[in-house]
Image (cartoon, rainbow, N blue to C red; front, top):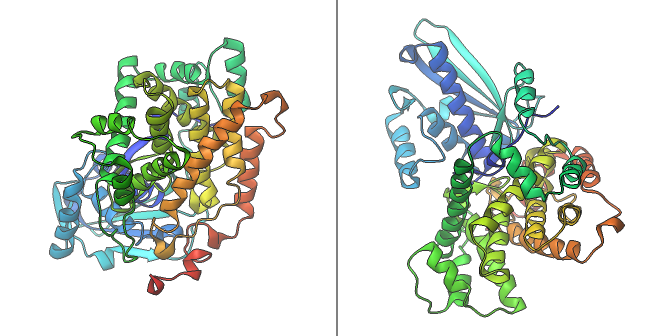
Length: 475
C-alpha cells in the first residue's frame, strides 16, 4: 500500500536544473546532515565524501549534482536560498577547499577528491548516492539514498512502512488508482478537485492550503515572468540562446507593466489567433525551462525538466480562456494536476532515469490536460480521459539530453507537452467518456511496462539518441 501523497509533494518549489539530479541529491544531503546531527557531534567530523552512482554519475555534471550536494551539506534550503547566493557559496568551497558543514562547522573539502562519479549502478534504483562522514577517532558513518524522481528521496530500508500506512488512513479518500478516484467522485457526487481538497484538509488547515497553493502559483508566474524578460546564453557549454525573450517581445509589443500580475493582465489584451496562442503557450513553457536550465527557482511539476508544462497550460487558461479566472480556478487546477501526478508516481514512475522522458514530459502533460479539462467544465470521467490521451501520445519518449544538460531537447519538449495537454483536454471534452477504450490506469500500466522494456541508454544517461548523434563539439 502506498503512503498518501499530497499535492505539495508533487508540486515542490526548488532550484533547477533537475528534480532527480539536483533537488533530490540536495534533499538527500540535507537528510544525511540531519542524521549526523541527531547521532553524532558534527564538530568531530574531519571529512565528508559523496559517491554518485548510475545516472547521477553519468549526467551529474550537466545537472549540477555536484553543486547540489555541496549546497545541501552547507545547510542551504533549495526552497528559500537566494538564487544569487549560489555561485558565491560554490566559489568559496572551490577556492578555500573547505565546506561549512551545516552552515556551522568548517571542514576540509576537495571537490575532485570528495565527490566521486561512479558509473556503475546500484541495484535498488538508477539514481543512487552514498554519503560518508569520517571522524577524528578514525571511525566513519555511511548512508545511501536514492533520488527517485520529482525531488523524492528514499532509502532502501522499509522501516517506516506501518507509519506511512497510518498516514494514508488519515485521508478520507485514499487513492492509488484512477478508478478509485472516479468511484469517490461518483459516490460523493463531487469533482476531482473537491475530493482532493477534502484529502488535503485532513493534513493541514484550509488557510495553509490556500497560502501554499498560491505561493506555488506565484512562483510559477514569477518564473515565467523572469524567463520572458531574460536574454543571453544558457550556461553549460552548449551555447543555447534563450528564445523566450525574443518571442515575448514580438508578442507583447509596447505594453506597460511592472509586476508579474500586471504583465498577466496585459497579455489578456493581446491579439488572440491560433498562431498567437501557440506562440504564447510555447513562450511560457520556454521561459520556465530556460530559468530552470540557468539554475533558477522553479516548481517541480512533477519534475524540473518538465516544469514548464503545467504553468504554461494554467497561464493559457487565465490569459486566453477565462479572463475572470483567479485564485479559485488556480487552486482547482493545481490540486487536480497534483493528484494525477501522484497516481502516475504510485503506478509507474516520474523518474526519467527509470522511464525515459515519458515519465517527465508525458506525466506533466497528463497532469495539465486533466486539470485544464476540469476548469473547462469536464466531468471526472472526461478529466481522467484527458490525462490518458496526453500520456498515450507520449508513450516511449526517450530521455537523451545532449551533454547531460537539461536543455536540448528538454526545453522544447515542454512546449510540445503543453500543446498536447490543451489538445487532449479539448478531445476529452468532445467525447462521451463511456466510449473510451483505454483507461488512465491501463495507460499508466503500459507506461511502466514500456519503461521496463526501454534500453537503459535512453534513460537519462546521455549514452544514446540525440546525446550521441549530436555532441558538444557540434554545438
